[in-house]
Image (cartoon, rainbow, N blue to C red):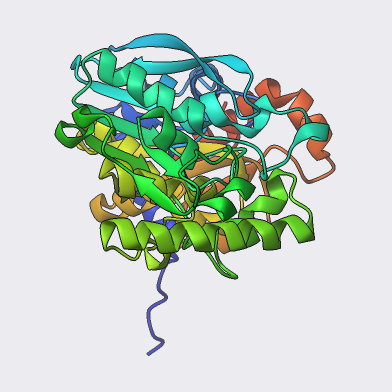
Length: 407
């Protein structure tokens, strides 16, 4: 007698979703894409996917719930999901020039959400002026202060997309902390200036921070200094030359030692403190922040798990699927939570690093489609993202219900 063949997990999930559809007459699908960075916002992506599925005319009910992981789009996603309000503040940009930064107050009226990138982001610095030796997080501290002024008792901080490598020193100064050299004078702003630091005076630090819960969305495990630290791993992406990396790491090493002396805590060895050029360390040290996976913060805040209780499948997506998924990006968190409920997860990516099959199966996607590849260049996919996403969504509709082509 021949042994029974075991179906791949993707086929099992497909059969389950098909039987649900046939049994109830209506399949409910949760659409929760992240942004396709530089091309489509998470909201635009969700609308395109919904149109593609609707146009396939298969009687599928879609529920749109755009997501983020602490980077670009986090403020908009959380404000929209909770019925909150977008606000703006005039703050100091990464090069010291004024910028208008957007932040949000969530629907509860006491929780603020801030994106570091809005005040201290790489996108605010022209490419030929990117230099983490001088860029500052001062504006991020001003955003925190604006949220406190507005009555926030809880602040969610997104750490993605920073242009800085100052360990959150600029942020601390904006909140009243004094960073002094050996002569008792304030040091300059920027990562390199930390080499002049001799002591930290926290006596004038904003006392409201003691009564405020701050959660930092951190999707990396990097420590503050050394070969896996903020300077070595991320400073080159922000304009640092090899010689700059050495200067910045040395400066952060001095900073870490003085933080240790001031707070009696070894922040340099703490996972995640290297996030956003060491802003993770500054937030923990000066604001008492807790570092958490950004995707989990967002999914919890928008009620993702509650939505899973009433759907038959999930469709997600983002600009690129690659090895970074294992570090806690939104799509990884979605597949983990869906797996606990046995729900199939279909995904669409702008591009895929390697074969799509590598991301499918146990613990991953039921199916993964790409806007590029198969004769379509990435440039073409980016310029025709909406039409291609609509087309891929039609294909997924067919996969979910067993139709050959989604029509």
